[in-house]
Length: 466
Image (tube, rainbow, N blue to C red; front, side, top):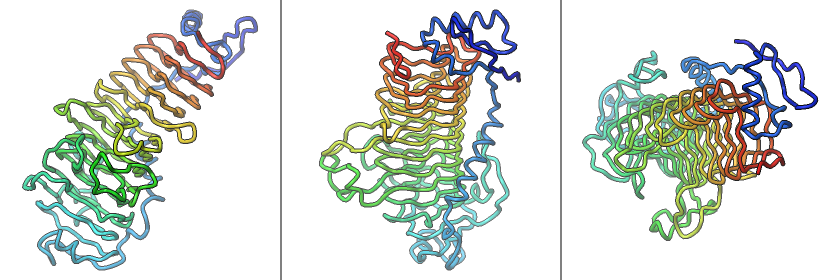
């Protein structure tokens, strides 16, 4: 790859030239920049370079390494066995009976087999599969799981539809409450848009550690996160969904799981939940028959997850979505949805939504942070902020999108820095419809169909284009 170096700025025009740029290339760029409408003083702060396309394999390896580093500090030491080991089926015939006998610090160790049970896990109890940690391949996935996870199965095919997931947790359960190495499948089918639905792993008012699991073919969202409110039993119309009314937080660690082909989102975050979602692979989740396609990962209603080092692909409703959420309850939800979406690889999701999208999330004090992600092959926009969203977009690479690589549409970006776009079948960066960008530096756009940057009816650092 050639790296282009700055060699000067023409005094009369402010046009930046790059070393080894052919005259026709420079002429085309200059003409497109004029069409784009971005002032020369802003263009002069951007980069002119060839943007490298990484392979999905290399990008996914880098994302997983980032997640592994973050998980070292996140996995609590108290999650290591400190009490008794209770064996299933050696000491108890069912997992449920073993959990009932366990106390905080105990480990329920489950032998390989299929268990037709829905579980309630106590605070501080570790639920772990027995067997080999040898990495095993899951069809359609790049991530590998311990072999024991594929051999130890919680199956809901004999259960009735209810608000109970395949695994629920005691309210207030902490990180020392662990689920490690299971296949979790076949939760009965239900509409996850309706109140009182369940998830495959049903995290409500708890902060457990979920790791090394295969969550597949459940009839709702694969892993769902919600807080519990003090008036949790009140009807939806009368409930107080404001921050001060939370009784139990939801700050789970969700690490190194494969979540696929569920009837809803792969991983969802709602109502002020703030999980750490690290190093998972999420693909093939689809709820088309409900009429509104859900993305691979989504958050709303004040949720603030850290979404880091995940691989998200092949989900019919888009990749990673942040939005405000519909009004609920007796009062307006009083906090912005503001995830940090960092170091993920998002590719080849459906046409309904962009690879990474923010519809109305964030605020000046709590912006949505979209940092260091790799987007490849989106059939629509790569990264999008819209509908009064407030965000920071830095250090992302967006390749081969069917629409603009990065789109800011009626939104505010506090920092738009060091992003690279290549191969967009439209403009590289679109800043339109009353948007404001406060800082815009060191961005590069290469080999796109349209101009590198487009500014229309918007403001960049105090410079307005009418």
